[in-house]
Image (cartoon, rainbow, N blue to C red):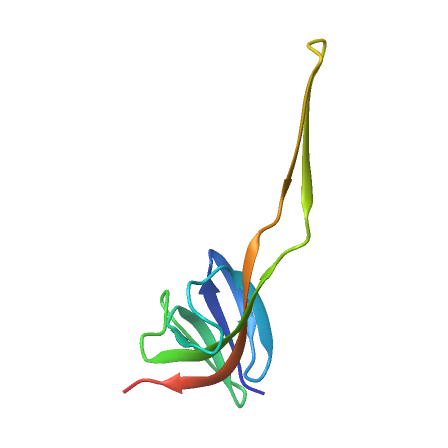
Amino acid sequence: MTYAIIEASGKQIWIEPGKFYDLNHIPGEPGDLIHLNRVLLINKKGIQYIGTPCLKSIKIQAKILRHVKHKKITVFKIKPKKNNKSKQGHRQKLTRLLIQKIIPSI
C-alpha cells in the first residue's frame, strides 16, 4: 500500500493515489493538473521515507475535479443587556482534488 502525508492548506493530510480529497480553495480550472511538493512522509511497500521537514525528491500529481462549498455554519453573536444581536452565515470554498500519482523527481 502506497500512501503519503502532505502539508496543504495549513493541514497535514494522509493521501493515497486514486482517491479524492477536499482542500481549501486552489485557483485553477477543473481538469487542470497541479503538483503538491510539501511531502512530509511516504510509504512505499512497507518502507517509510521521512522528510526533515519535507522530501525534496517527491511530488504528488493531482487533478482538480471541481470547486465546491462546505456546509453552511451560522455565527450568532449577542451582547447582553444591550439588545444587540447579529446573525451571519459562512460557507468555505473548497477544491476537490483527485490524487493521480506520486512522482519521484530526479
